[in-house]
Length: 580
Ligand code: ARG
Image (cartoon, rainbow, N blue to C red; front, side):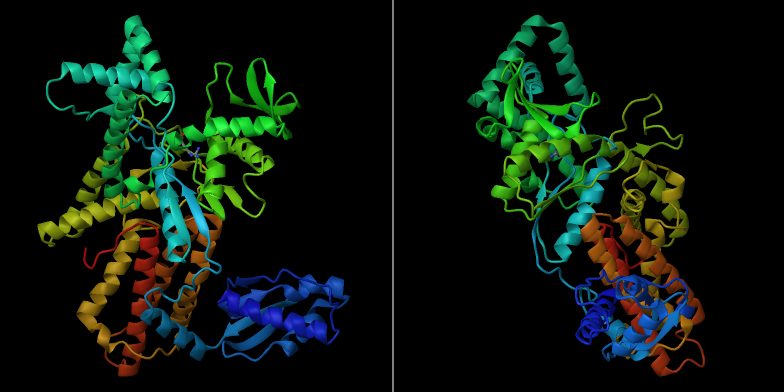
């Protein structure tokens, strides 16, 4: 909707230039906003105020000129000049009605595909091997997945990159310990508790010199491509990722085994990268190590930042991997955009790796590398979210608790649902609530995890939105089938408000794709539900005195709302249900 008005204004600016009413060299950034108060129309622009000074005109006078040169269109019913020179647009209700009909009828709710479609790599989730996913992994996993789904929905070619931590010297001790466990255990190995496994491996490494010696030997062998070590390593990766897959499936996260592109993938490329950086004069020797000095980033002492890319003992670093990784994503995967969903503490690390990759010519200017950072998950006390005894909370345990709590909520609310259906509702509400709590906050700040705020049918929560959808479905069951929906006519103010809100969906989805911020969609869906509730209160569907035409129109508004809600929630990876 904004885009259409924007287009009209672009044409207007061209006509004003052609008529020499404003200087030809002006290229204003045309902005169109939703109005807060409907008395001021549906949309507004400050274009006249923006152009007034450079055009040497009074803003209100210029607003007049703009309106006079606005091309005729079916969507604008009326314009008005307000205050110092705002132009307000009132949308035509017939046009609005047609749009709502189109939304109700189209599978994508009239969201326009992105143009041009790009190849976009999304780096998200990225747990570590031989560790269980902890609560903090939910942020990258859930936010990254929502943005991934949104980009894909808009027609981009999206490549999911699960950059798991599957490489490093710790694998020596892990292999040695896996070997020990296998030897002692007659049956096929079962590693249900990865945390304990890692702890034990570390303990042996620290306390048993013979074991430690063997572990160090395995590191060298693994890096040399030794078949036995490689197979043992693979086993650890597979066991970990099989456990993580259970969590992904449970959370309805669209990652699978084929999306794994861990640190190990880049290992064979590191030597060539280091050699290339040295040949290009970017990397220089310093105390036996290889270092890149970055003038653009100053360290604490005001000196150029030194980034080590190869240690004195020949080992490579996390930064080296991310340089090779950025190169691979551009040269091999042909990315136009790479989105990294990683916590904000890794910001400097990424800046360094990317700057080096750009200087080396691996990533051309037109490819955008974006760190979509997020803050920490905090407990109600404002401190990092921990177990009662101060340990890290396993993600699987958090999800168990969510199901328990949702069970209590649903037992009360949906007592008469058959058991099988109830179980489905509980699962959808539990996962939806946990995900939505994370998604609905602006990701750049820390957020407080609070069960009571997320598992409730009131406020900006998943259960509230899921229930709003279900409620519309029940209207169709009780009041009339979808076949009775028909031509839209917008008369009541509540209908107009709802219709306007529905038309904003396209802009919101594109905005989420652009900014990598799913909370914009959450806020929108919450507002949409609010508009729907007001509409449903003000505009009865099946009451006496409601004409057949009114009923048909209102049912179409219901349809368009239900479609937008379920589609919007699906972009967030949240399920909706017909009944709850
Ligand atoms: N595995 C890392 C961690 O747990 C995150 C990796 C993020 N991706 C990247 N390209 N560095 O901290």
